[in-house]
Image (cartoon, rainbow, N blue to C red; front, side, top):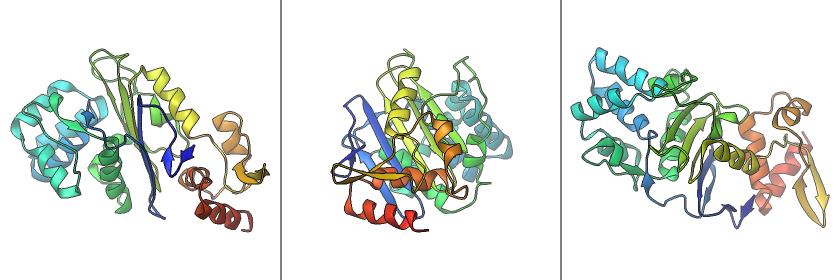
Length: 263
């Protein structure tokens, strides 16, 4: 999965992952490539509105995150045109830029993961951004299904989805769990985005490791759910075993995995 500490994916896929307890982070080589932020940037707008808006505007921000309503986004961004810029400065999102219209704004999956990681690290899952993402509608305001990409991973508590006007051309999602965040942007349709996520984050419960050709590797896993239910350590979080799999490519990962086997 990792090549010299980076996700081994092709150019079409931009991915960033953070394991909160350890601070371990893995990005694709292009994770800081600036792309249109699609509807993902609505998390930035909402974060600003929750601090500066009226009660009515805060309610609109919640609906915006849950349904990805573009009309609400346009009204809120008109009221708070510096919202994306302010959030980028607040959270140190170096490659996130707010444009005159929200739809022309840009970000990176590295910045998206940084933003969500800061939220999760605070440990307040009642934070209005996180709470809204945890209650996303199954179908968006424009009729698009919100059920793809990183949302399929075990342990995910909330997700923001994004897609291009030409829906098959680009899809993105950013998810968080109790101890991890992950964000992907793929130049492909939603189904392909999901397939790529499942390929990258193969379910392998902590401690399920074998030696092959002198290297420590995760055991081959079956379907996502089957692998999760087969683990003997029911307390192991999704973030822990994902981090364990990703760390296998390094010496630190081998030590981490061996400690997991001896628990």
